[in-house]
Every structure is written in structure tokens, then in C-alpha cells.
Length: 124
Image (cartoon, rainbow, N blue to C red):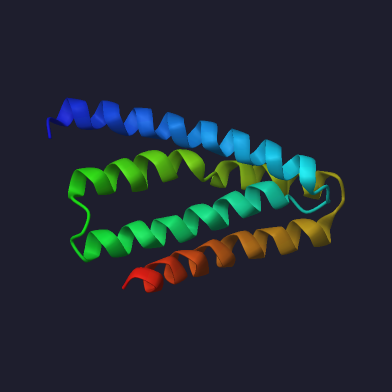
């Protein structure tokens, strides 16, 4: 694939991932209200699981390198959001909700990584 077309396609997929994140965030927030930032956490777990599936498919050579980039870097990169998670941790800390911020920080570091491994194992 032409490098310029691939780069533009990754940008488009990243935009689609961002829109999907925005929509998922809205749906989750209207259904579950809590101190814990469940929307971002759920989105990052879902992105991690999907990333593991995409990585396993690429490793098994069922996805080409360009499709892998479109999905992993573009779509899932736009869908997942570590920066929002960090901002939510800081917000919780500033609100003096130190326990919630600490649990959220630990869970954000561990659970998505476990989800990636699980996604990989589902395909491998």
C-alpha cells in the first residue's frame, strides 16, 4: 500500500475510533453513575481485548501489516484513551478521593494489559 494512503487511512481509522469512544462513553455514563470512571475504564479494557485479538491475528499472519496498522494504530488507538484515564485520576485526587484514584490507577495499569493477553489467547 502507498505510504501516503496508508497514513491517511490510519488517520481516518483513528477518527472513527475516537467517535466510537465518544459514543460508548456517552452510553456508559448514562447507564452507570459512579465515582469510579467506569466509562473510560470499560473502553480501555475493550480496546485492550481487541488489541490482543488483532495482535494474535497479525502474528498468525491472518492480517496483513497494513490492516494491522489500520486496526491497532488507527481504530483502536483512537478508541482507547490513556490520557483521559490519567486526567480522571488527577481529578479524583484533587477531589480528595484518594482511595478511588489509587484503585483506578492500579486497575488502569493492570486490567487492560490482562485484557490484551486474554484477547491474544482467544485467537492463538
